[in-house]
Length: 198
Image (cartoon, rainbow, N blue to C red; front, side, top):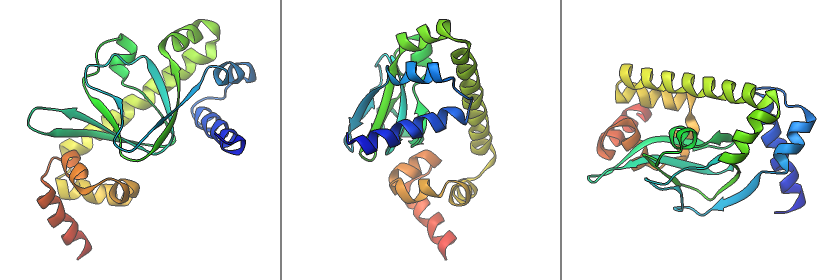
């Protein structure tokens, strides 16, 4: 990775951390020394169903699709845009097999730290427990809001919400993946889109 790109990556990671909690210089140096880069090609999997996830990722560039690979069809659960921390929380925290898969929809650059490093950091400095708690709270609130939307909005209303609040989802996710996420067929979503643009 070119020096300029690496410097930009560290800046992005630190800014994302500090939107959650200010990080002491000693702990930032500790984290930088332990983060490792990873790149995925479009269509490559980060996690497969049944994997035991032992990494916490930071998505630097690109886009991930989280889905359930059922026998009948793939059911899209969510999409992960950069910049953002990401892992399978249940698999990572409980060290259980992943119940979903994660695929790169675009070429995707990530950094990661291991489960062992995260656990050790909790004993190292109070910042990490504080940061972990705030991240867990943020994740919980996002899931609660998402569940409310799926319970209350019709597919057409949900599509309108995404257009207004998450336009990158509309522009960067293929139609058939977006239809699966909204729980409709691609044909139904095409009709919704036509009515919205008409």
